[in-house]
Image 1 (cartoon, rainbow, N blue to C red):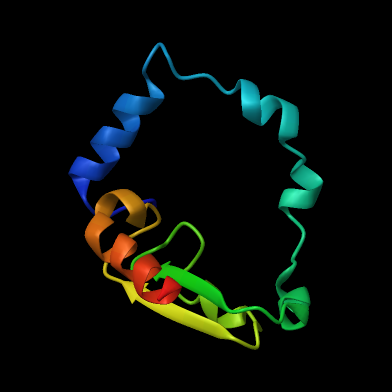
Image 2: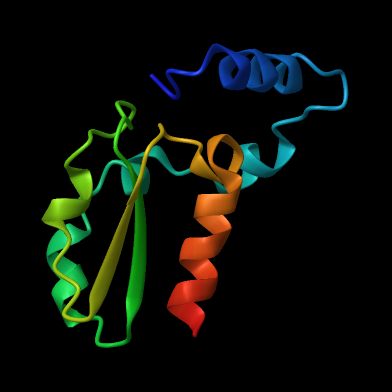
Length: 102
């Protein structure tokens, strides 16, 4: 669900299996109730420019998830890839951010 690129999935699995990997941070901040809340209706109240980067093949949250945001000043960049675009398509991901900042 995270990627259709087997190399990416293999790399994530390798990191997850690393003895250095811990979930200590998540144990202290994870609040499943809040995680499951739908904050999308509140996005219409955010008046600053917002960059939304979405993967065309992000089946983890859905390929059209970004369309439900209501940021008044939203710029959306769709990138060919899945849920871990910062890794799968790093150059396109970084380019989108720098373009937005400019």
